[in-house]
Image: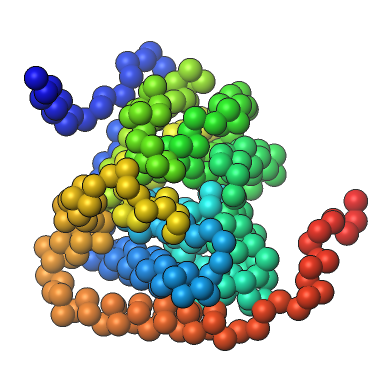
Length: 349
């Protein structure tokens, strides 16, 4: 006889006698803030859809990992950061994080097509983009590598006493990597100002987190290092922003690192080459119908009297900007062959 599925329930934080951050409140946003969240998430969604089209047409080569469905995480969390001093680092699903940190869509799209005008001069591609001016430190192709590098960024913030916080994103698959735990240990020992963000989109490269992780409540992963964790609805931009506020309060007060597990969902496969046969179409459609982050904000705006007709100009503006970025990325020149010999060695030691 088949077992009856267990009822969904909120996972409580572990009982401990150590100080913990408060459970975050859902952020109370003004109409103007909600419109900004809507605009940013829609920009990421339409940009990624266009990137998928260009990949299919052969304008983008190599690997390409889309952020469709996860927009609330980057927008909600990074809207709480100070872009002048806080640093962000992530893995290879990086386009959304860059857009959420205000980087020009044209420069990102041109990098995807390998053009000289790209953010990394056409030499990084989809998975390896940087903008140190914007405090964005990649885009990293090695699974989990960004966790150690992000810990280094946090060390630099503390060493330089610049008041900055590092936000290091990684996925449910990367959460099982050894360097993650080495980083946790050092970050807590040295009370580094870092927020570890686990974007749990539930399937890693194609295996359910329930089948690949002995402890699938990933916000608990730091407990043995005395790092507190919070589990967050990553499909709700206001829940994400509320969690960011609480995490920043903890880290900026000198209490050391914190883990945010964002329960989110990607609508597309792991990469453009992934047919995603490990889950049903009905499951994906159910998430789109019931938990879509953009539709959720539209409902919040509707409750404040913003109509569908009032949102149409924003949609048109976003589509125009994305189309312009695609045209730019197709037409701007490729790098000069001499670029093969730059950025290979450090010039001075």
